Length: 394
Ligand SMILES: *Cc1c(COP(=O)(O)O)cnc(C)c1O
Image (cartoon, rainbow, N blue to C red; front, side, top):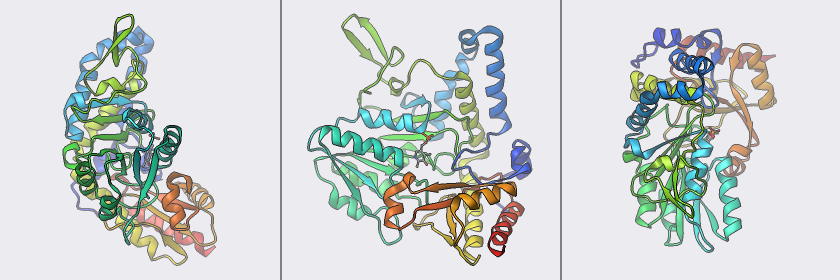
């Protein structure tokens, strides 16, 4: 059994799906706990009774407190938080607010996420900027010394991925941010796979902007995201509405001075309340306990898989996340996923597109991903490992 400070009975009572299935896809879209469901569903019901405007007005205080809750979670100020519809929306808003002109450079890493990469390459081509990839060291970790060598005054942005989508890697964010800042570049941190499974504190990472999603390790509703923008950055988004700006004189607009300039007026209030409940839930358990619990489960998975003949674990890096990626000789990733699904085990299967640079460099075209959250118990991990073994024997 695990000795990690998680009250397994309590969290599993809050998560009925964790008992009915062996759920190993918190890096994809996790199981929201009961308090998140209650908050979301009860608000939808209230909207059906009194209409969306009045229902939102009744929760105005809670919605406002949500900024402080998110700020506490990310170790920043409430006015440095914007709520969005996804991590990608957060990331795109941040990215497109960084001025980029012909001759400028953007640095990305081998762990760059697919959607970020397409946005960067597309915009760089449109404005005539240059994109360079920072190589990794022999362990697969972002090489901070190599980053330093690539930095110069033309680099306007360094795009970092804290924990990539396709390997167990955790990148050394602080060292990379310090190097970027010394060269005068801004840093946008993709914390989509780290927020909710390990500490992501704005001051500790040093990043200028941080994007995160609700639906993965935070266990919030789908269609929710968070953007942290540090104070004083003065970056204007390219897309604003009357929530982010005031139309005070016919030909002039005044932008909000805080991170909420990145929000649009319309949003799903029920989902926002659900996300705030998810942040509170994670706080209540404690992010350090969550991190220990996720790591213990992922390590057990990794070790167990590595011991099965014809199974290859593809994790890289010296610090590991809760994402375990593997392949099975002679069985395609989709087939492994389907076979496990038939046994009530949920994992995900992906091609190379999510992290094309890393996958191409390692000669991988697809992989199966198992990502256990703290609500997965020891017995379930053993059952998962036995089931994978059985796949090979038949
Ligand atoms: C899932 C993922 C995203 C995108 O998150 P959305 O919520 O789909 O916008 C971004 N970066 C990484 C590393 C991811 O794994």
